[in-house]
Image 1: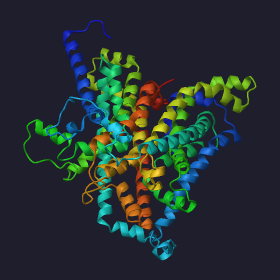
Image 2 (image 1 turned 60 degrees about the vertical axis):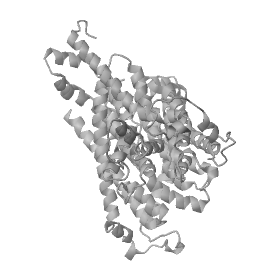
Image 3 (image 1 turned 45 degrees about the vertical axis):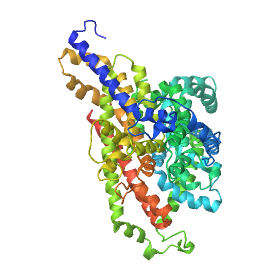
Image 4 (image 1 turned 45 degrees about the horizontal axis):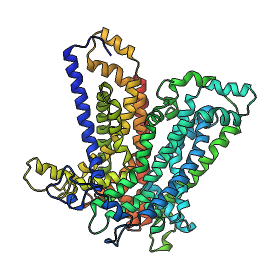
Length: 288
Length: 316
């Protein structure tokens, strides 16, 4: 930074660095504790006073969870939850991103009647709490025979996640210089071709960011699905995890193991897209 | 209201936007937004209207005939709510919860982002550490803090005991006002990273020449923060708070698993109370009225934030 750094400045700098580390480590401790617990032997989990640093690590919690432990008969249908969650999150992400990209492009590139009003309405629809939606949806789904239906749930998630996707994609498409589109028009491209062949390829990083947000939102959603799904066959991971905590004696280690499994997609996505994630959220605020 | 989302996000690109052709009637963009709009109307719009209708009826699951509309009794559910002390309690708790969470979380994120912007070593590791809470679903955050705040085997009490605290076990999730405190802590832990990351990105993107000029003028660190950083961060603040305001009802998941609004409604929020009335007690009419309260609170809150931010933009 600055060439001549005084010793006083140097020690302040060291203090800043140290402070940042202390705060962030404190912030991360709860998460680390959950992951550590999943790999501890059972005796350590309930030990009092607690064992702060594990003396041994084991996969017992995971083998029990997936039914590989012959001593434990009663268990949770984790595989079923996993499969359901994957189906719902994948279907809803594909549809959300396709629809959201189209609409985001329209808002970013065109001026049309009710432009601002439509955009605002869409964003406000995102502000509707899941609680307020789940009740009427439950009544309607019961009539239509859609409760406990994975497609029905996916459909709901698409609508819930589309506003945020449109918001993100609008920001991404605005970053693409309009000259490119104009050049495409001059070359005789149709409006669709200008979108499909010029803008869309440039928006791929944005689309992947939006897809991750949509996937995680569906993967993590608890409130709506817990009302719309009552059977184990269609239950996704979050209500599955919740059902597990409602048992008479909570198996804290088992819960931690389930949490670890549930975190996997988020961990992978966050690591893969650290950079795009920040850019995606702040697009439209940074001068391009 | 007209100058909200678009007005702010389009500012840096103002010139470019003017170049875009203004077409009179164009079917193309309308066709592009049509699938999204239809879906939102179908899955969000229609159910909301339906629940408004249900909220005017005394509908209960066990009395199928009660889904009948009667003008003379249409406001009964709402009247009943205004006479319900638990309703007022949940509303008060929610206002308290939202005010503290949003403000405290913003101030902490602002401080943390300024700190991180100054860090010279291990920036990328620190940023990865910061993102850890983002990997947790709200339901996991709730589970985690329910466990930590558990009075006899929770991490927090155990930690206090090993520090030498020798009083009685602290009932974090049960005593008042510790229950509210616990859910606020959990909620801030969950939301802090996103806000910090956005504000950090903003801080790092600020032009350095302004700071150099301020240095020449001999401005103090605080003056630079107040007069340069804070005003220029406004668009980032706007984005962070918008995301916050849209996600505020996610607190439902945390509270549902940590305290479920209890004990004795001490941590009852409007969202948990809605589910209690509608899903647990199957009073769909009353529950729908309650759910409309949550919609109105959310919309008022979002619009209020938009306005505040438009104001801060004008000042800067």
